[in-house]
Length: 271
Image 1 (cartoon, rainbow, N blue to C red):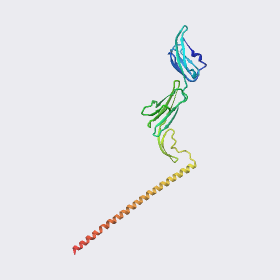
Image 2: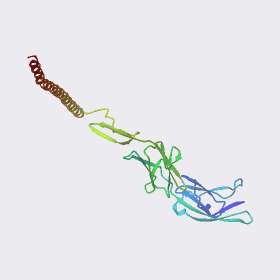
Image 3: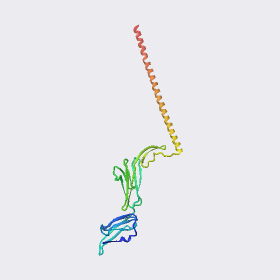
Image 4: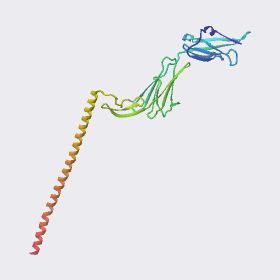
């Protein structure tokens, strides 16, 4: 038994590029071929001598069409079949772009240019994202936002009917609060590429002079503040000592007249 198919007249040279498989054993099959690649068509069950055909080398978009073919032996036609072939451009390599948001959330965007009808999917450490990990999904920009506590390997997969690509990154956001080159920095950053609070290994003379001036100024301010505190404490101590002395004097003068009056009373009794 042999297969006779109109597509065979379109086979030219050796195939190259991507290759997809099409099961043509059922009438009305829907098949997809990669742009610039090859379709491998299975017409009969395994084990038969004539099983598969490589059809249409270097596929172009004009090859998208409905094809009819017949299967027969040497005597008669055994079966008529048809299939629909659709050509798609393969998806390109995946690119990821990430950023840390103001509250420690992590936004990851996924892109793949050139592919027809791409479908995007996300995983975290190999499993689908859950509501406890996912803050939001934007299908227009193909981006997701993870909650603050979430970390691990985030992967984006892009696929269509003829190809697939994926990419993974491992990073998480941390909050830094430090001073670098005289500038105060307080924000969420990626641990993998945090260089905001790392001083440069080499410094120009101008930078050294400026840093020394800033340091000297800081020491002067600290010294002045310390002196003010010391003088304030000394003044408070003198004030309380003076107040205590005056209080004792006032107390002594209040008791003296009474004692003199008592002495005079005793003298009068003795007389």
